[in-house]
Image (cartoon, rainbow, N blue to C red):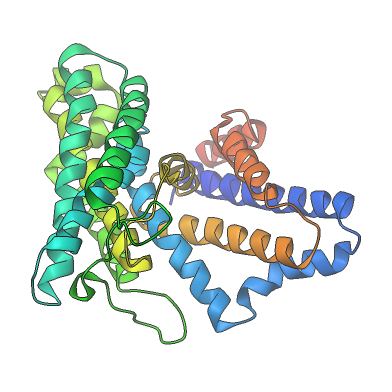
Length: 347
């Protein structure tokens, strides 16, 4: 491992540590029992099987959103369409889960495939606009998120809504469509295993395939990649299709893994979370798993300390912002990075 890569790992770890220290400062300033609150924040997530299960459950959609953004970042693209893709893929797959009849194992696979297909179709729009017309993918994806939310809510309210329930939710999914529980006493479902498998497959795709090489080359220098014979237009479209499939599958897996009916009435927020996860992981698909678990751990700890004391849950938003700021700041610890790399060159 090169010193530059090692330093990036160290810098990420320092960013996480700084975020946790800031959490301690917030707790000290706000809480009447700071020591007990800090203890709850750090240790409570590991104190029971149920809380450990909460960490894993929360990490699953974060893994999918992080993988989708990691693929985008590798191509030097910044598309936040994962927000809308998660939502509309849940809607698309829910149609099958509500009205289709299939055998137990095949049924959830078909629903997930439908969610992935919906994600690919949606992501194809900003992908083609970027590849063919040079449209800014961040702007087009953000605009599409609002469109997808409106379309999804219309379908939920007018087609899928269960009139027997007072709240805005869909009819119940068929039991055969639901993902199976893999750890008794928790809500950990087989979607976690799919998320891990997806991370491995994305790693192989990005680092062991011709397409992955072209994506990385395009991300490093699109003009050089074009001069080298790489079809940059095709690469941009492939990246959007891959990210759409990952996010789409993740959105549907969250629905049939954690819910018995479609219950989202707003964008779930995983698009922005995915950007943070990808940054923490250094855009490494395998590192996305660890980054997702770290963020999940922080969220569960913040939730538990909020329930047992006077610490606001908004603390986690502050921590996430600090992590993103430190990781995205190129000058953070830059002096030490230069000194370390110079020593390697001289040595």
